[in-house]
Length: 238
Image (cartoon, rainbow, N blue to C red):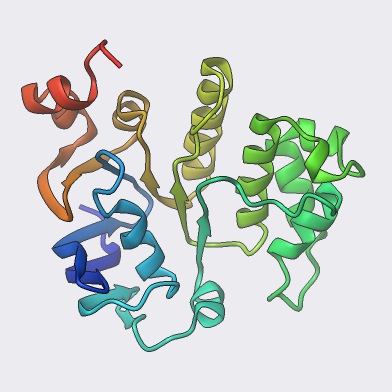
């Protein structure tokens, strides 16, 4: 069993009187893909936002490589080796593709040319469009740009919030192939995804989150075979 890169223990997140995350615990082993599946409002995004310091938890602990993250600002957390690809892509639409990529490396002081070459190899379409404004890209290309931008900081852990949202099925397939490739290069991935079928096919481990609590955990294959999961998330009826 791989050592845990990220450990979340008894995490509680509140917004006013509403408890969005209700004491969850989750381990993310180094070098693996872990997915959190569940319906909208289950607390998945709040969990990811807590890890990068965008939300202040009301209780619990989050450690990365044994270091407590809760006292650190977001900028410092990024330098520790964690990036978040947010839901909705959030690219800088008026900047070119290459300027967006360079924004992903803004905390670095070293030469980024090898990293640019690496993301252009992973995403050849971005290389073709490197001088286009990001706002002129298709939804799928913007999602690829958001992932590529996250890789520019050389993270050990990439967290992705709904990377397939709003994309055509053929593009979803492509995005998940890229996720696997990034993982095979050694990057650990924590993935939130409403396309539970693709997520569980891709992930080593998974957890089901419902109304702020984790209700089931297992390998991707175990969860994909679980009758409750199949009925709730993998059914043909949409």
